[in-house]
Image (cartoon, rainbow, N blue to C red):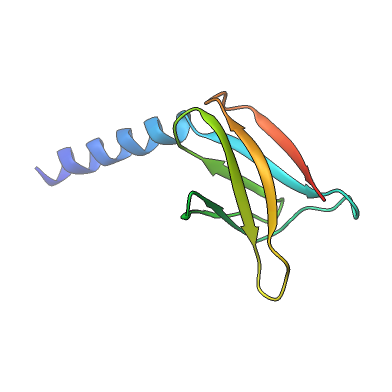
Length: 94
């Protein structure tokens, strides 16, 4: 029974990650990655960018405004189009 539960959990994880959009956030002014920024959409935390400014976002298709947050930094708002394409999209943030 435990093995079945683990298999189901693995399959669900793979399925949800497979549909997720992948974004990479870059600073427009400095041409550098926005590393370890919190990504909020509709007041929901979708995680943090990694060391290369990337984050997977798994939600329904549509246009959204994401708020990027980091300690002692001004919040940054960016418009995102979620289309479940699974392709890396680079977003330049002012």
